[in-house]
Length: 250
Image (cartoon, rainbow, N blue to C red; front, side, top):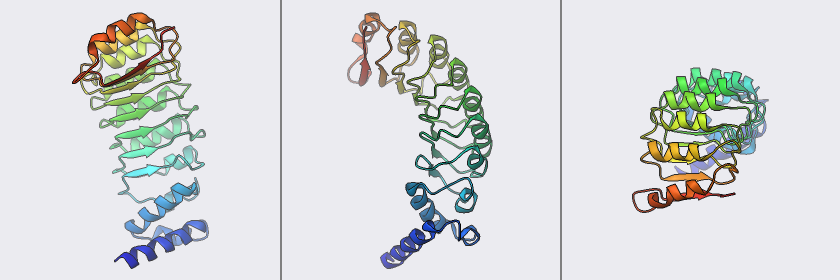
């Protein structure tokens, strides 16, 4: 069996190098062979807009495209209803148009990483929140085009959310309060809102008052948050309470 697996991997490496030439053959590969091919091609960054539909299959559950140069065209070709995790870190050419298509085609998504996707706007995040009801983890770090609208929709729609990152964005207290008082308030365990220049002590207070199960809470690099928030945290750190917290007091 080990020899067969080794042969399959060697064959997949060879096909991955010449994927454009073998596109017709790739379409007909069995799912296990495609899984191996996807793993190799995504690691190499060779999945593209032009070949993604050939290498994927409907049952794929995890897709890491962070090394690949793709656009909305690729996202529109992902018809994978069983997809649970998609990593799109620094895929700077994707926009909300692609995310809207992805959300409608992959409603079972649980983990979505959009770190550094600077062209993604509120409408794309809204589509994910509305269509992907099982969403548990989302990273919007450095998504500079999103606003309170995105957080408000997540707070209204994603009751299973337990981890969210939105550092380096322009969100305000309004968005954080909508998130902290939304349907995910009891499930939320990790909140990373570092380097958010518009947030104040009101945002911290909203999280501490409403999210009883929060365990990781980081808000360093937020210049409007004061020593008042540090004092509020004092009695909430310890066993069965907040386990990791970081902040900067200016």
